[in-house]
Image (cartoon, rainbow, N blue to C red; front, side, top):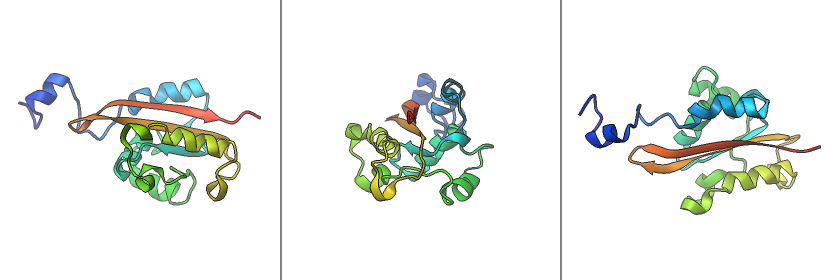
Length: 152
């Protein structure tokens, strides 16, 4: 055992403290392939089994700029500069396990088709959808993200 890691964690090669997702590793490719940056996203739908995991994913995807999650909360989320989980996410609907995997995709499509009713994000053209899961001990075994955009 080394520095607070168990032999089991060491043998699986899990780095860090569990507060970074695999999204951090793919973020640059995601934005490059989409041809836009996090500042051009109109809304974000992220997996939210716990509020902290939603924030970690947003930070890993570049929404916190310099990694300052407090600033992300106060300057971008609280001011609705970036609406997050506009349907309330799984935190409001109940975590359905594997059945909730497309929850964010469904809400993003509703928003982009202008079918979200009272929760409609005005003028929304782009959405980020991210997922994180298959938690083994304190580490997620998978993460993924995509950018959806309206066609005009």
